[in-house]
Image (cartoon, rainbow, N blue to C red; front, side, top):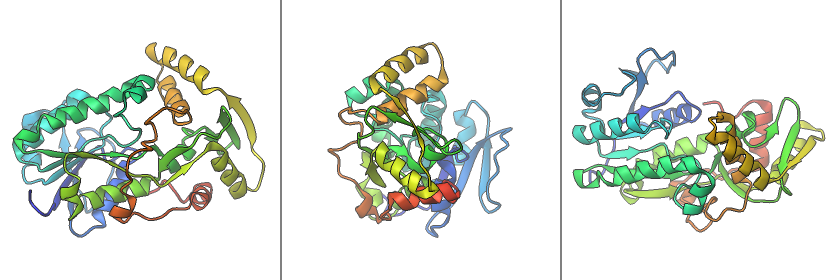
Length: 306
């Protein structure tokens, strides 16, 4: 395995996480970074970043000349787009790409019980299994598990807090611990994983990171401290919410998919918080973060911006 990665291509760099991965890689002088964008996309990127355009179908033959000479591909494409991602993987193998980082970022998709609670996580496991099938052809992979995106989760209401209305939806008693990670730390982890010696050590395996382990009640206390006032509390049960959301998700309700995942983050599901896995934070030299300060930054509008 070559000791150094230089040329890195990011697919899906315009999403929630993409700007942070792009920023972290761009700030590291070891890497020459480019992005893959669909033709017709209105997404914009910094002027110094090379943008390669590809058709909606991600045709392998169209991808091949773009991927030639790339050392690593970071895919931030939604896991449900299996056909598109497999095309990117296949073209990466043909082009001689050394490392593929799939869009695993988020919940732990490995335990069977977690996938039973969040069925669409099966897409993530299926993609890792597909990458494993390409190991014999020279492609290596690294999959990053990081829990919920903390700062994005606050601004988007995914974590069940509404900054505009100062309302908190507390699940059960609000005391279930959950591992979460900030977007900037996830981006930095990706960059560090492609550096020596972590590149070799992270080959063909899952990597686990977390900014902190927190409960809803702790997040709410930090929000009330940062905003200087008492928030309105509403209470819901995780079991009832998950049961209802799964039924609605089967009917095609996209909001129900997110609602179920939120409730699962605040549920006692074995393996959901990868509690038995070793974190790579210290090994990668990731910053030690203070949850109260991150919440204060979110309230001030300084977080979740690359």
